[in-house]
Length: 365
Image (cartoon, rainbow, N blue to C red; front, side):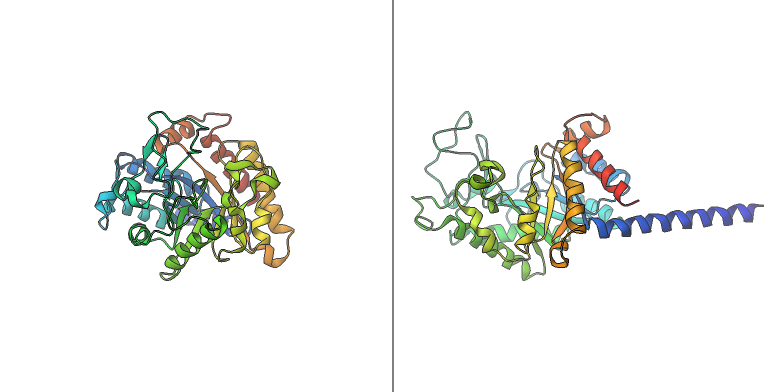
């Protein structure tokens, strides 16, 4: 009797495993990229995040994790850039090992070009190297408000400064090595400061060429080490003619860079309140793209079904450019955990993540 029970148990376990593998394979053909983009955990939350990977990401068949690290890592190459609550290499390896168990690809992110400040605070790169500032004449306000006379949202570094890439590429290489990553996310969204007329290097230059040049420079550096560049897609869309506006698209003519960047750059196309179908724009230009919702569950469901439809009803070359869906989280990890584990309904990142992956996994059944 005991042998029969053991044999039955093993058979059931085998069949369940086979069913899971078939569902995974089916999902891989429907949506090759199924991701979450979130800030890296603080050291105190690493173990909780590892548990989240095992208990939530893996069962939901998440296969891609974009982790916004920026300078919250204990960099050996540039200790002057280490920010508060920085992860150690040992803590990073806990995350890496958990993701390896479930074949989850990690794409670390450090914001390059734009987002070198936030509100009234200058970021670590421009604090340590103020000579890299593209707009040094714009002073950080005591109280940040938008709009303002300087059109200051976030500062940028000068992409043509002769020393900037030596520093940022040291950081890129170190964080990719730490996470054992074959792809790197450079951010590059919402770049409002570019081609300053007072900059001795950038003045008078075409902003589209400046943006494309920086994308290409970063891409080429990564390619030498067999790594892929990922970026947000908003600066490659025309905000005026499309009506998308200055946040989700460009008002300073960088959109023409879409025809100047290498075709192996991976685009994360974000729209949060309305399911604009701009993934088609990127795919038609020969770029691989994933759609990235945030906190509106209904929008995320529409975008998910759009992405599946694009793949199903496109020519072969276009089909393979439509890569999948990535949920984004723009609070800290502790805030996201509160939303997610409390099952908060409505327009939250936690609820959107849950609803979107429920929809994705229904498609794979």
